[in-house]
Each structure stands twice: as structure tokens, then as C-alpha cells.
Length: 408
Image (cartoon, rainbow, N blue to C red; front, side):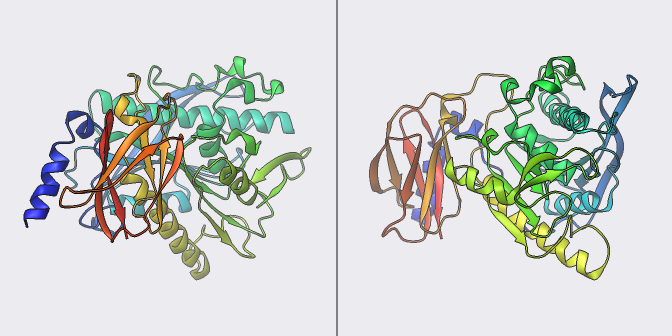
């Protein structure tokens, strides 16, 4: 008991700055078990408006799912986008609705968004433009929740734990939101300046659209090198026999002139090379979105999808949330840890947008004893477990928020 009290005291001594970057509480089964039997749905919530390809104005709406009876003040959020090749689909599609409801039962707030569809002429250039418009709408949805977190707090969202998620075309959007983040990366033929830049004009200006991570279900990117060192992690699930969105490098557009894209299998080596965490689950011999539908086979794929994404998200929730608001980033956000819990090693990563400086760090056990002292010399560096026993440790250093390290 004395050891436990000392450990709790150490956490308290971490200071106000550390508490400001508090992790999401994942105890008592939250975000892992369906501890909420009922869900509260808010249908057709307006989050913005935007000009369509035809020049008309479309009101953008979403369905929001919350765990009924939840009293937590700041909760993680998953923003889902449906599939349909940017020509069809809806926020009420079966697969995204099912996923939203399942994660809401775990304690997440989830949202399924509508976005601008259709393009003309039906060619490669205009499907690319449609994907950019749709991504701008997804950014507006993220900004909507960040604005709410800064003002009325209606949805009680933690602004440091917002994730972009999507299925098929929606996964293109989620990936582009996170990794197509420089105007210079956008092909010139799209004319991004005419669209209002990467952020667009779909609503809620003045707030950040940066996310904590990405859920990529059967999606792809136009270029793998859009993924760069320091980018947020993503999880991918994809069938090797996908004839709509290639598992590796291939083309999309069916009867349209071919547009080369890089599916989940082709994104993994790039992300691995630049040290962006990116677990990939391969549906062997499965086609496009095998988890969509109500057949026994589709529901089995849905169970796998739900669990694999859940297991990706929960360790991220245990890390200090990335500061993604409009205020300057605090020095204590300079260090991120992944994965937690860990079996062999934890990766220390300097947060995106910070200037890395070497630090001397200490690792303390539950008694407060320093069990290791070392130099954090590189922006990305491994803290190896070696002979340390399983349990919770504290990592601390001057100018760095004290953080928990858990070895299994």
C-alpha cells in the first residue's frame, strides 16, 4: 500500500502542465468492452455547408452517436466517412453505422458524416477533385467538434483525441486529411486554390482539423510519400482480392481513365520506413469492404474489423493527447510514447511541429526508485525493457511532462 501511495504522489507531483495533457481514462473496461448497453443518436446535425461541383450549396449533416448515461467530461471521437466512389453512399450506410454504434458502446463519441458527391465530366481529373472536396468536408466536421470543445462543450469531446476514419472512398478521405497536408503535394491539375486550399470553405474556420490517428478500411493514397516522419499513426484493413481499390499499387476509376493509387499493402512499407506506426490486417483472398452486409460471413468480417481497430485505438488513448487547437503547443507535448503497454520496447517520439532538443530522462519504478537514467538523443529513440519487471513506471525529465510507461 505504501508503494501505491508513493506512486500516486509521484503522479500528483508531475505538475499542472502534465495534468493539462491528461491521458484518456481507459480503466474499468472503457474503450475495450461494450459497457454502455444503450446509445443516444442525434440525427442530421448540421456541421457546415459547401458549394457542389454544379455550383449549388449543400448543407452538410452527420449522425452523432453517444453512449447513453456517460458522465465523462472529455471523450475521444471517431469521425467516419462512408464509401461509394464519390458518386453514392450515405451517412446511414450499414457498415459505417454499425461501426459507429459499436464504438459508442465502448465509450467513444462517433459521427457518420455526409459529404459532397458526384462529379462531371466523369474522368480522372474530376474524381480527384471530388476526393479533395469530400476531404474538405471531413475537415469541417473535425473543426466542428473542436469548436464545440472550445465553446459550448455539447458533445464533451477531448480535442486531443479526434480520429478520422472511413470505408473505401471514406478511407481515401481520412488518409488524405492526415497525410495530404501540404499544398505543394496536390497535383496542379486539381487547382486547389480554386477550392479554398486544403482546408476548404465547408465551415467552422479558425479551428484545427488535425487528427490523432487514422482508420483506413479498404482505402488508398495518391502518393505513399505523403506519409512523412512524425506523422500520426494509422491502422489499415484490406482484402488482397479487392477489385475496386487495389491492395497494393494499382488503378481506380473502373471505366474512367486509370488513376494510379497506393492501397494499404503499398502504404505499409513507406510508413515503416519513416517510423509511422501502421498496423495492417490483411483479409486474405477477400474482396472490397468484406465487412459490409448482414450475411454471416460479412458479420464475421465486421467482428474482426471492429476488434482490430479497437486494439489499435486503445493504446493511443493511453498516450498524452496531441495539442491540436489554435493555441501554441506547450513544451510538455514534446514527447510521445508508443506502444503502451509494451512487451519489449517503447518508442520515444518528438511531437510533430516541435523543435527537438536532447534531454536527460529518468525511469522510476512504483517505489519512486530511479531504475534507469539515459539521454534522449534522437527525435525517435527506443526505450528498451531489457531486465525490467512487468509493471508501471514513470518517465520524467526537465521540461517534459511526467508520463507513465507500462511493460507487460
